[in-house]
Length: 96
Length: 305
Image 1 (cartoon, chains in turn red, orange):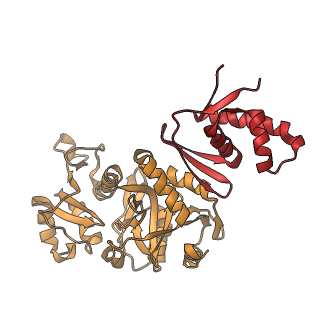
Image 2 (cartoon, each protein chain N blue to C red):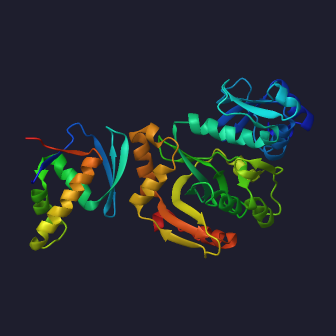
Image 3 (cartoon, rainbow over the protein chains, first blue to last red):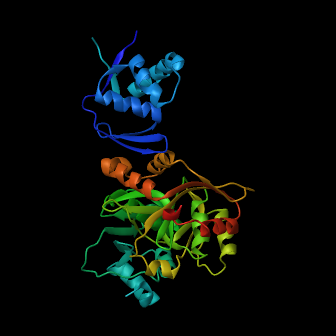
């Protein structure tokens, strides 16, 4: 099932980027996270609007300069990243 | 007036009767004790330090005492008290001076929250600070002791104080704590350096403290700019080697070595982030001190890299 996700509504994030890595501070929890470029971009996109792994893959593929046939593989990787971001209490699934 | 302006007798009398008001960096400690080994350590290692006005503001009220229990007759102990509290269990009396040093570190790291406090040695040259965060056993104090005997200025061998308001490094030069083999290594490396007597069987093994260079104490009010963040590691037989560290990873490692990063919240995050922006970050492996000093002396100023 292609679950939809959103950033936690009350999330107050502060981020700094160096090279292709991000450090994100979550004012809500006081936690600091080291994120790779893809995870950080997913988080920022979910802060703009809820989405799912397939839609995120379509948006991210051009930014990551990937061929379209890799989209399915990318969607799978994004599913893992979404799970990681959920574990870090940065995003949550939208229950319909 | 400095500690050295007091005669040995006056120093001991004041320590016992009224206490002394010892200025270390930006902190004033009111130290009260009649324990001779603490007076010996102060006389030997703190002679260049200013004595503050006894009516001025005091940051820490410290007493080192011998508990008046039956143990004092066969296994005497020392108590460390800060502002009337006893944060530590007593130690054998022989460890009184190291306990004063450790206790004073605790006073600063537990209270001075206008600074981001990093567990790191920090030295300075040409206005730029080299910050060396590392866990115990990585050779940080040994490296620091070598470098301050070869022209670098000591800001601290243990606590790097980063002013939250502007990100500058504020010096806290105090005696350098060395342990086990490092004591003799630095004695040979810097034959002119002054050391307290060795104290054995502490939780850290055998320890001794090295007197900081007089120039570092005299320049204790001169702040520095973060220049380099260097994670040192002693590795037997290794050639001295500096390797660039990705900044985001250096951020996480630096934050891990802070005493009060979480307590400062967003200010802690921003202070570390600004340091990472300004400074170059490296991993550093070494085994021979002269090679290490050569590499540190060749560090390029951060703005030109």
